Length: 124
Image (cartoon, helix red, strand yellow):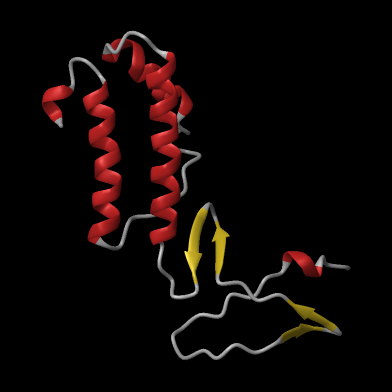
C-alpha cells in the first residue's frame, strides 16, 4: 500500500528533543512545529494556546458579522442566528484551555456576545 509522504508530518515533542531527520523508507519526512489532530491545534510543547486564539478569532468574526448584518439586537433574534452559525456540540472538538490567559481570552469573547444582545447586558 502506498502512502502520501507529504501528509505525514513529524511533530517532535519535548523541550530537549533536538531536530533530526526522519525517514520513511527512502523518503524524508517533513518536520512540523504544530499539528491539528481531532480538530485541536497542538504545538510541539503540547500547548493549545494557539487553538484558543484561533477559536476567539473565529467567534469574534461571527459576532462582528451578525452585528453588522442584523439591525435588531434582541436575544430572541440573535441567539438562534448565533447558535445556527456556531457548530453543534457533537461536531466541536473536545479541549479545555490550560492557562488563565487563554480562559480570559475566551471569556472576553463571551462577554462581547452578551453585551451585544439586548436583554442580556446585565450578565456581562
